[in-house]
Figure 1 (tube, rainbow, N blue to C red):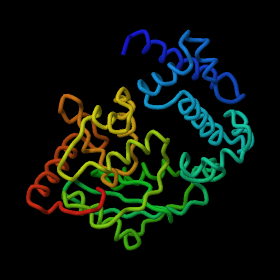
Figure 2 (figure 1 turned 180 degrees about the vertical axis):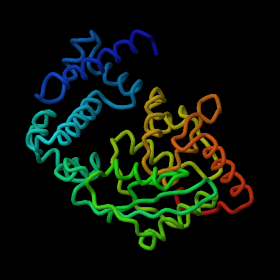
Figure 3 (figure 1 turned 90 degrees about the vertical axis):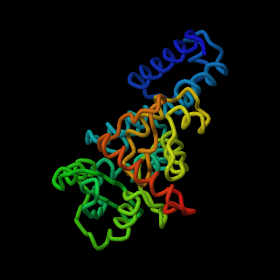
Length: 291
């Protein structure tokens, strides 16, 4: 891929960002981007997806959803935030809300107000693990050494939700996460209730396909989802995974084979990979379930 094309894609992305902040009249057209960069619209769209992992329209939509989140948090109301984000009607926002926000725009504007989140905490070989869930499924999994710190993170994420500890209600989810932390194969599927862009969902689904005891590089994941140039975007998707272990982002390594980053620490990442490899080699990792 030539430096000229990469430069054109970067300029197109910057143009979309400027338009997203300055105007609220819908997405930037491919023709407009082509005129701005001097590259044919069709070719620009194709190369944009190769470099960034998403189409110009998806990139623009992600920026508008970011503006919507910001508007909802500002207290201006759903209608005002919808208009400011460039959506033509609130119905379009509600159509996308379940996947993009994880709840309705009204509830998101209230930091999850109306949501009932239960959580449980258990000791494990890597310290402690917190598992939190709504009625729809697991919304957060965190590893750490401090119950207070993990709970603070949960409350910051869902500041106005009703949050209560209920180890009994979370018993089955905790048991499954603990099983996986020991390197054993999944025993049951885990329902998830998480916010994600379309690209993040692609990446996270591919991570769940990595067999127990194996790892992949960022480049291999990018190629597997048909976005070979989107390695950095894959890395960002891994970093923003809210449900550690349930979505095994620890199985992704740098392209040079080194561990790379991990939200819960490189030592935990190494320990998880080692436990899974040991279980797979001993036969304890056999299961038809996705990890």
